Length: 315
Ligand SMILES: Nc1ncnc2c1ncn2[C@@H]1O[C@H](COP(=O)(O)OP(=O)(O)OP(=O)(O)O)[C@@H](O)[C@H]1O
Image (cartoon, rainbow, N blue to C red):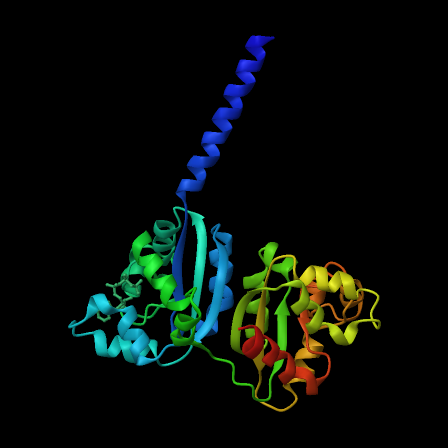
């Protein structure tokens, strides 16, 4: 009996050390989709998730010249720096914190060689081979060490309020837009890339995007209009606080975009959506009336208020 107990304890000890070892190897890295890759971000997010990364922070931002010079300080004096700064400030970028076992090295491997043309020869499945153009317009960035990752994450996702004020700003336009939130269950199920791809491939423009970890009072306030109206109100609030969600500002070419986007999202009940509107987002990715993949602004006149809630109040 004593023998059995000792063996059991040893196996627990073994399990404990395996977990510690795994946690030691698990690391965070900083990843960025450069301006030329933002319109393909859905496809790239899909690859990131398929390759076992967890997206723990995400924000679409606009870098200034000062941010780009700080970010690429190691390249000071290099002939390509002025062009690089111009390129990095030419449009929004997607800044992300990714978590994986050996995350820093694993993300560099998925990125492929700096020069996209070289990447197409040496690593044809890599992100730069598939989405980059050449050695400067190369789709994405990855930290080269854990120390760089910490420095770079601190530029885009600083902890202190003062540093947050100076960090690259969100790209929300607050003009003729509507709000869409990818719900926590869909993020947890690894559907972030699939949903963003669908949105982009159907002609809608994502003009702002950020991952949020919502708290109860905020979720209650956000869904206030449904209180006493929808039986699912509490379930909806609980769903929104159950993990990371991704809020987006959606724009389109005309004033009808909010209604068109609403139709594209489909009926609140995914079962009904699958019968009546099988090509909608909720038909494809929803499960129940509460876990229906995305929230989308109901009334066009509320679009701006909802976008402001996330990108002015919560940001
Ligand atoms: N010779 C070059 N000509 C033009 N642009 C370049 C050149 N070398 C690097 N760059 C640009 O500067 C960025 C930073 O260069 P670096 O040598 O740090 O490459 P990297 O570590 O592969 O890329 P990143 O730091 O963006 O992940 C490159 O990603 C590329 O956009």
